[in-house]
Length: 96
Length: 191
Image (cartoon, rainbow over all chains, first blue to last red; front, side):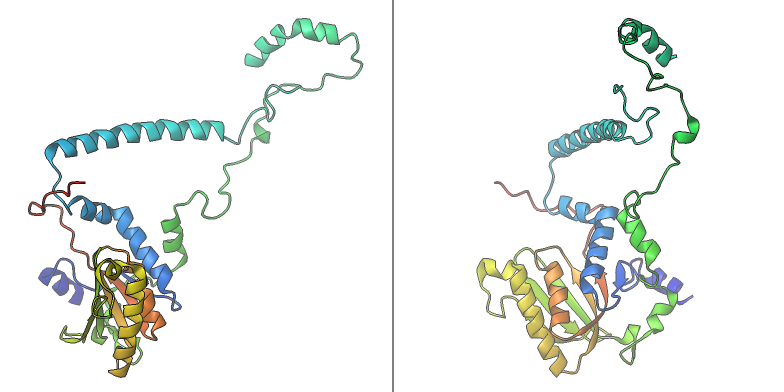
C-alpha cells in the first residue's frame, strides 16, 4: 500500500530502486554488486552512450559492428565448447 | 559404422603386426553409454553466472516493503541521514543531508586542497571522504545511507573512505541520471 503510493508519486523512488544493503560492514562487496547490476542492466552503457551526441553514421557503424561481433562470438563459443567437450566416446582418439 | 570403416582401413597394418602379437587386441571400440558421465555442475560458480550465485546465497540484500521501518543504530531506515556523493570525471562532491534533504555539510575534493586534475582521482575522493566523515561524526551523524550519482574514478573510493572515517554505512543507492530518450547531448569531443 505504502509502496504503491510511493510508486505513484515517483516511478523510481529513492532507496527502493537500485539499492543494496551493506552486509557485515563489507562496503566493497555492496559497491561491486551495485556496479555489476548496473552493468548487466545496460544502465552504465546507456550513460556512456548519451554523454555525447552520437551522429547517425556512428550509430549505424556501431550497430553493424555489434552484430558482427555477436556472430563471431557465437561461432567462437561453439568452437571452444567443441574443443573443450569432456564427454568423448573414446577418451584417447587416435592412440592405440 | 565409423569404427567399422576404420577397422577395414587398418587391415594391412594389423596383419603385419599380427606376426608379433600374441595377446588379445588392446582396444575394442565399443560404444558404452554407461561410461559417459552425467552432466556435472563442476565447482560452484563455474557454470552459474556470478551474479546469480550472489543472489542465491544471500537474502535481505535488497530493500522490501518493510525495510523503511528497519532499525539501524536506533533510527528507522527512512529517518537515517543521507550522504549524497556526486562523482564526475573531474571532481567528487559530498553532501550530508538529514532524512528530509536539508543540507548539513558539503565538501568537495577541490575544497580539500586538491587542484586541477588531482581533484578527479580516487585518492582525492578517499581523503575527502575521510575528512568529511570526521566532520559528520562531530556533528552527530553516525549511521548513514549513501546515494551515489554519476560515474568516475572516485566512485568506489568515496564510499570506502566514508567507512574508513568511522561512519556506519547502511545501504548504497545508485542515483545516476540515465535516460533512454534524452534531449540531444552536447557534441562529441574531437580527439
